[in-house]
Length: 173
Length: 129
Image 1: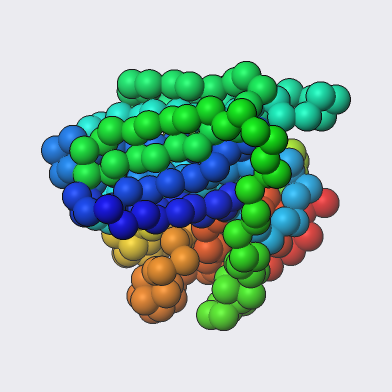
Image 2: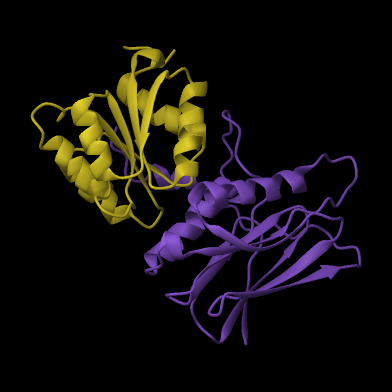
């Protein structure tokens, strides 16, 4: 089985029985989506729900609102239908005391997103104080999650893309 | 140039969460008349019935997509000059070129920060405040 590993701000889509998608979560959330008709699924991994109005961050795919858009569009580009999609939600742990309830709010965002978009949540394993290793067999829509009892650092960041430079390449005004 | 509160906006995106995020961003920047639709057909009927100054439309939608909507708007004698900003995925560069040929006013690559949307609007309308 070939492993596709994703980190914060990344997503992967796969319909190959020989591949699985993996990630390691702390307070971040991963949403696994699966279209049982097309037998294609995908997973993302996001850090926070939504950017604030004044946000100029360049790495916006770390926000759930954009990470979900990218994942759903990637699935639709592979012929999936939004109304077929089912979701599994993972992560959202409180890893460090005193850093607020980021994990809980991330899980809430994912839940709310699925509700708003009419995506059925078939399984959820969120909250707690431990990191999670998640494996998604995207071809079958099956996922496995293992709690990580040893102390782990938050997963590394994905390479920083530069969407602003990208957006300016073909300037109209 | 009109202040944000005087600009009537139509948001078109099949993803309700994205429509809500754009609406919140616009309202934070002072827009008061913000409508939204989930698809091109619905949006075209809505802006024909109730004109707006600005259409912010996703490209990738089931049914009439953003290009179809842009073409229909530009071909309409009444609403043809409505300002149109297209939202595209990063892989849609050819779509941007097609949109430019159809007369799009500007475009924005998803994912985008709210401040980037404001900047694109200001390039067409001038300073909002």
